Image (cartoon, rainbow, N blue to C red; front, side):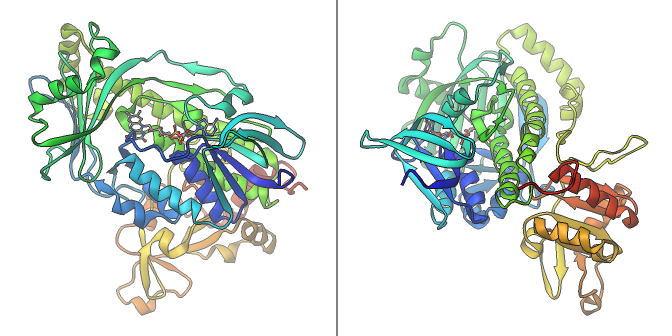
Length: 534
Ligand SMILES: Cc1cc2nc3c(=O)[nH]c(=O)nc-3n(C[C@H](O)[C@H](O)[C@H](O)COP(=O)(O)OP(=O)(O)OC[C@H]3O[C@@H](n4cnc5c(N)ncnc54)[C@H](O)[C@@H]3O)c2cc1C
């Protein structure tokens, strides 16, 4: 039994391990999951994911089930001073660029149940709960994991690659050996999740009360649930804060009492901001909280982990299929590390707004933010955009940088051969070559097409919406309303290659340059020789 070598061992079956198992399993890889606890963790933590994560869940085949356990946000995320002035107003209403609501609220156990069921239902995924990994030994062609199962017996499991999705105190990270960068941002918050007995509209649905007397977060906890979070004051101990009596005392001014609400749980968490410098060594990879932690003010901790999982899934898929060499995995830390630092810094900046207990400092903050019109771009310190800077990203020429490379691509609705729907539903998932006014197959050589076919790429010539649908080019995908043609025109581009994680590999202004772009992709994926190894 121990002789069998799985393709991938996923250590930890939280949302990130679940997403990794789901995506790799759907690609047909032999995945074994080892999770310490016999039963799923039943208490809520994350409550928010953004539009990009919704698109990833849909690509993983669980979009419809996820929608059933989420509430989209209808309004703004507001940050208010004690006197009611608005300090920050972030528009969370409507659909985001990925074709999913900008902001979605859920209860983590319900979301995890969807992801876990999806993964466990796949024939190539084996989930072992109650199985704690205690050690790893690296060999030339595999890693052996030692684990203790729920009977206390020792087990050995072998896999070609190991994903450590084993959370903040990761065993895999310890073994991988990486320095941690810690921003020294530590604040204790009491989290109270409750179920109001009456169901109604909460307006705004999500907000922060930046009152130095007691900074407080009031947000949705997913369908039928609300969450309050209270910052620990200097004179309080964690033990005093973390009691049911304290929770009810702090909820009382909000009109929440045992007569109208049930507390699901209360817990004190220490919010912190840190990341591992290295997420990959040899056959070991880290994802999710094992690689990074951030305060939850932007609701991006799990989201960042889900981005890790799709980045890893498509790269491991190419390596396991022998399409790309193992060196491709070296791009993982560079791409995701830079991106996650953006999320951590943004979360810390938001944290600095609310975690203020000094009345004079709070008044100075209020004045500055009100003056800035509560507009995030003006009220918060400037931050670089969240793009993938270095990795499988087209660099362009120094005199003509590729402005779209590394950015998140949008998802629009298309019509094709009498059907219409979102891009992913109509075209499918994977690499995509989108072009305006020309069929990519007409400008690429047989060798280019063979290479793109080996990646499983989709060819998507975009044509304008036609008044007469039957006149649509049978090969073309018609924009339904403002869509890809506007997006390309806005950036002065005529062709773009999108990666399976929806980030733009690169783009060109003239379709005649598409073969050069494909050649650059080949080098970035396969190495300088452009020839796959093994
Ligand atoms: C109060 C709070 C609010 C938050 N709000 C948000 C939010 O709104 N949006 C958001 O995106 N994120 C939010 N987060 C962060 C989010 O909850 C985490 O980022 C997410 O749960 C991390 O998922 P993970 O799978 O990486 O790790 P975890 O969920 O921690 O899962 C790790 C798993 O690994 C298992 N494990 C550990 N060691 C071993 C071992 N040796 N062998 C086998 N298994 C092992 C554990 O049992 C666990 O099941 C919040 C967090 C908190 C605390």
